[in-house]
Image (cartoon, rainbow, N blue to C red; front, side):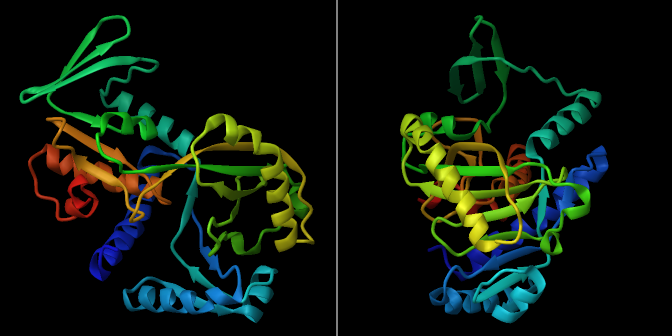
Amino acid sequence: MIGYKKAVRSYQLCAEAINKLKSIAEKIGFSEFEYKKSLYYAASKKDISFLKEEYKIRKENNFEVSLLEQKSIKNIFGFDAPAAILSELGAQTDAYSFTHALHQHNLKKGTKVFDRVNITKIHHNKNGVILTTQNKKTIKAKNLIYASGYETVNFINKKIVKLNSTYAIISERYEEDNFAWPEEVLIWNTDDPYLYLRTTNDRRIIIGGRDEKFYNPEKRDKLLDPKSNRLETDFKKIFPKIPFKKEYKWTGTFGSTKDGLPFIGPYKSLPNSFFALGFGGNGITFSQIAAEINRDLILGKDNQNAALFSFERI
């Protein structure tokens, strides 16, 4: 959809972002960011040719990947799949805790953080931005970065994202002696919508997916029970020998874009605005990319990656 070179560059930026996020975590003393391998497996035999082509493209662009056949997957990871790509570079984190750790670090550096502030009005002009709070206070700034997720689409007068519903469950905590997860790997498949599985630091297993292509909170929430039951069944089909006792279930909204890429940078209709909208399947890495692009543009520096994620591409 965007051309070979641009697609490869977006993958490279995400890979670089993982390493940069790890460096930031180490710098601020945040321990819950861990490198993990990622296993992307074919959900059915018809996806084998797709996976082989995907592997070839990643390999020729120097991504550290291996192509596994059915026997190897069974021997190493303990479940059946016709083919898979094993990526050496992946990671997992607690995004909520990471965000708060960043705030705490930046507070010590002089950053001011005002939580629970409701902005009721935003006025953009050629000289800057004026924001009005619920209690009639005003904030003046040279630039404003919108990084508030899906609600941000209310400020944009063109269709850039489709909102969907997703579901996830998490197991009870396993005892340390009988907790074994194959190679500590992140797992996901080629289904549409895809399933994903991973573990947590406190010895739980998460499985998510079963997405629905609609945005209706009431309708979405009514499906939580049947969807969570199906996810539990999905897990037992993949790992019949691993006992799974569901403890929590949840549902939420996510955004998908036509080309799978986020929207980052200025939006011409709102002078002095910059956006960090990590829509797509890589929101955490896209957010790191957005931070660098917006920083450079605000400082008047050129950023060769900005056009890849700009509003002007659609």
